[in-house]
Length: 363
Image 1 (cartoon, rainbow, N blue to C red):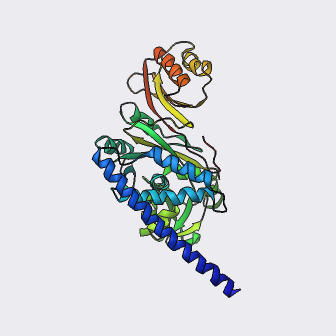
Image 2: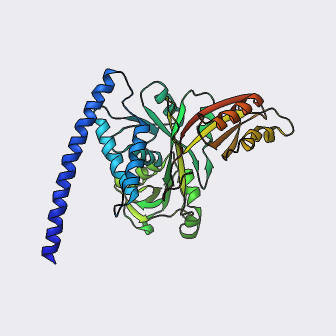
Image 3: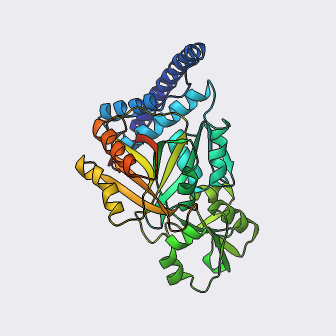
């Protein structure tokens, strides 16, 4: 048995060396393409090209290597290759080890340069002034709903939505000692507290909870106080030297948070897109029904609609909506043209590839 294992390991080592050789060969081609792009002042990052690579490789994969592994491996290959020219600069709501940070790494890999900010508004500002190529901001959680502050900023921003990220959010109870009996106080952000309410009430109902600005801040505070705990990500536990007391304490095991990628470029259609819009309507009987009519007439699926006070006039509301399809499609263009004629305010936030949920399903 030992000889058989030794033989297989030797073959694995040989394959690994071949993979390394091919990675370096690939990197040399990437460098050459980068020089050509620089000569014609073309964008060094192409999301469309990355999407094509993922889809082709996932289609070619015959197994047993898992499909999710294919995307994860080649995400890092492309992230590292891109950094040979210059790393992508991505602004996000910090600090490090927040769930937004995790979403960034899921999308752009470990070789991107991540720029944490103290507010969602600052994420937009960093992209607008060119300090970041992209920004990543939370937009909604499957349990707690919409992130209203993100919607409010889109009203006045000229940035476009260029992508979305779906992150499976798992909350963990952690502390310096790793013993639940040592915890006399718990720190966390209000959203994770709400998402873990059942566990907290059933197991730690007498322990006071202090709300802080982020899960990463909660982990940092727990690291400084051995009598406290935090609700945060595994990355936060690793970063701040904490031990996991209890994993996956969220009430809903299907706890997804959706993030938007913001940038300056418009993206071509992929065949599996969504378009996000904002609009306001006159305060009259049947107004919203009339706004939604163009989508029904053009057989367009409306996947989300949310209202927000306009903040400019009392009792006036702005609606945020997601629809299936791309602005380059005739039926989408017709519907939005018809809608715009009926609106007081109308804005297309972007057409972009719809993210896949685990298991390959699009939203």
